[in-house]
Image 1 (cartoon, rainbow, N blue to C red):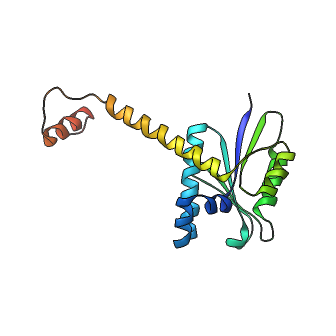
Image 2: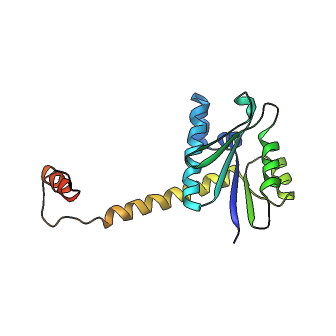
Image 3: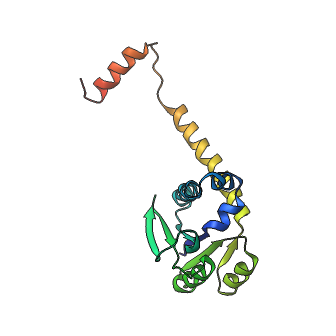
Length: 171
């Protein structure tokens, strides 16, 4: 069974998604945080390993790696681009049991990673996929809410709250 890994060109996706572009206009950090949240939802839904790569030129300093919402986030070294880092990751992570997908709309980058055996996914395709995932999650939440048992006896909110405390063993 193959394991799937999604490498995301962070700033490329931020520039392509309407929601993230608007956030970026006000504050870049908010757009980054929102992308990380969205990719955490993607990971939770697909089970894939997700790594987001951001260029260092917008966050100067040494290379940083961190986990945020169970998503791996990499800020490249000072003179390293996200494209270069993604290419390294494709060759480092690639193997017979791993299928790598790269989310970027950079055509040159798509050709390079495709030549290394990774599959490409444009930023727009990823956005469409996320919209579909949102619909699925919303449907599951609604279905769960509808399956909750409903009291056959009409109760005031106050009485229902007391019963709920008793049910949980709290007085």
